[in-house]
Amino acid sequence: MGNVKIEIKDHLARLTLARPPLNALNPDLIKELNQTIQDLERNPDCWALLIDSSSENFFSNGLDPQALLPMDKQGRMETFLSFLSFSRNLYAFSKPSLSAIAGHAMAGGAVIGALTDFRYLAEGKYSYCFSEVRVGLTIPDVLLDIIQTITGPHHLRQIAMLAERYKPEECLQIGLADRLVPADKLLAESEKYLRSMFELPLASIRSVKENLRLPIIQKFDAYLNSGDQKFAVFLEGNFVEGLSAVMERRRPKFKNP
Image: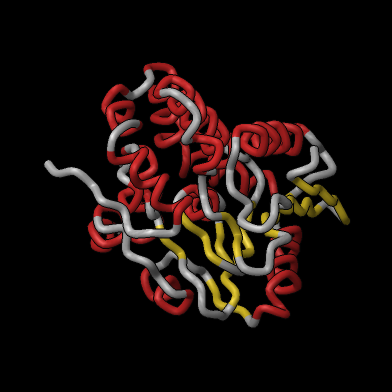
């Protein structure tokens, strides 16, 4: 598994995104992430999970336009469903989890951060953004529910509908970040916080986490079983233009209405 690095030390699993420079989520990386999460769920030596990035400037830039553009609509839908299956399994991961984010977290990268229990952000000049709308896409309601559990309903219009970019200090203000840490201390402080939970009864923590997340897990399952045709209509037209603009580093020219 060349795109994901795993280290387990004293019961703490560290999952590092290792597809530089952007950690763009192509089908192979999504598959590796999904399998890794399922393996760690079953591994009794893993008591908690830390997710970070090997890239200095990006946690993840989201789904890979270079992979998606050559696909037809069905192929894109299969890729999104694969990402949502991984999202479901990470959200349902029974053990405490934390994303240590240094660098841009965009679209699917921002989603990964939202799926873990906690987010520690490095201080710095980078953005956290659910940028799906900026590339002509939409956000499924199950992911909107997750964002709302983190930030409350008051910021959803700016976060999801208008795809606002947030700096780390702004993330802290609206709840997207649990703590800001100097970049050179991010990993150590993230590990320290997760290990502090080992002093508590982990079975109790896992039980409470399961109860908190069960309604959204059930919604994930219903979504994945049915397939969302409302989502599928966004996989052509403006989405192709949005991805092309990203690849060509230009402003997109969307067609309205």
